[in-house]
Length: 455
Image (cartoon, rainbow, N blue to C red; front, top):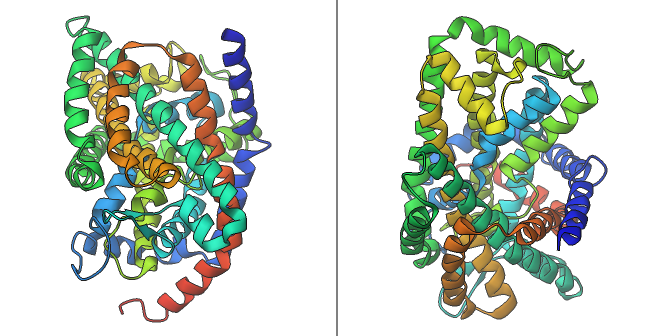
């Protein structure tokens, strides 16, 4: 069993390394950005306005949830522990300059998310029970034709398996360990698992409409809570913020020499870990987010594409940047006396506030972020199951997915986690193929829309 896990981890490291998935994701993002005439740079204000208007919708249009709730469902899965832990890892391994490459990758990822959401709405289907289903498996089947259906099946299989691991059990296990350690054993794993089962089940059994409703309230609150706390802490040390930005830009093209407990980083390391953090924090190109956007009540797919474009902006440019600046301003990143990335972020907050504020904030944020990820991936896994087995599979999947919550909270299923991590990464390959082949469709639709964007 151990040898299988080691083998799977080796394959995963290769797939997600600098020679396969990272250049593919970044390359497609650059290609789509150029093809869309730098939409992520030029249309950001318009996209923000469209996102705000997306709270309301015309009931005569087709769909299940409002455009805004579709975005929040996507963000529920996207905003996760990586926004805290992943950013710290990027700095630990790539130095401050990694943050610059994280930002740049997010800007290209915005074009990728735009295309994913546009195609998801354009090629979505309606099931016999009235559910609007879409995503890579549907725009592969309906956009590329029957000869490509095998690729759609592969994506759906990868997505459904990944949903149980990276989207469920890994998250609930992280929540359990986090809460048990913070409570100093007062809350035991079975107690935490029971609470997660009750709250998670109450939401997930209701399907995308209930998840979308909860996400529409829950995600903005948890994101604003973390961002506001971070901003307040930064304001307390506003004199050090310009130096932190300077450090990011000065290290972006030179790497950073060893200092204190920091071992140092080369330019290649800064680029590698910054790009990886940017790509995997907002999931641009992985094919998960369009599954949620496909359910939006919207007439023009391009409008939902604009909301999809905001996803990487909020996740990476805003939330991840808060974590990065806190770590750099605190100076804890050069001490090297932390055990892991989560510890670094906690120490950074505690150092600036000179108390235990960071311990509370990181514990609460990690718990909320991880729980929201479970909700979002329930939608993704369910839609993949519907594609593979039909719409009647939806309620069965929700029950099984809910029952997996306490299993993940209490067990260490390393083989399951290794498989799900690998399949999560492999989801990107069929999706990227479809995005490139269908890009002319998106380019044409975007060009027509922006001739009269208010119509």
